[in-house]
Amino acid sequence: MEETEKLTFADVKKRIGEHLKTALNVEEFSMTFAKQQENVWKVNVEFKEKVGSTVWPTSALFSIDATTGEVTEFHKGRYWRF
Image 1: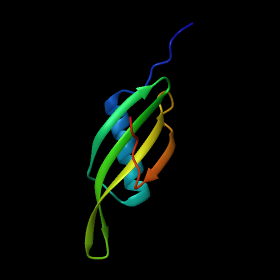
Image 2: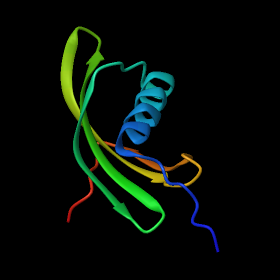
Image 3: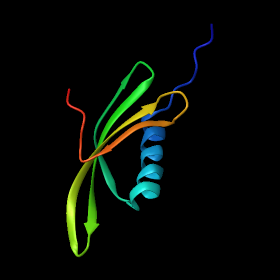
Image 4: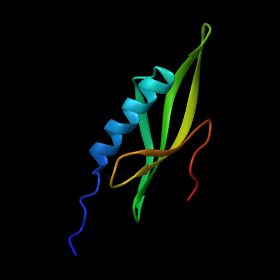
């Protein structure tokens, strides 16, 4: 049985960047945690979000399918705890 190629850390960062741009119009972010568990990447990110004239530090968690790259979970204002 041939093993399916999985997303690299760089691939995951690119997918998150695309998702944040589309969902929240955020272009700059930091990955503060990333762990691949079986076929899922679990990632925490931090970014600044502008609300009116105020800029707030914000966090979000992601689950990304390690094979397809699909974002299967996204929660703004939350983060994975390990």
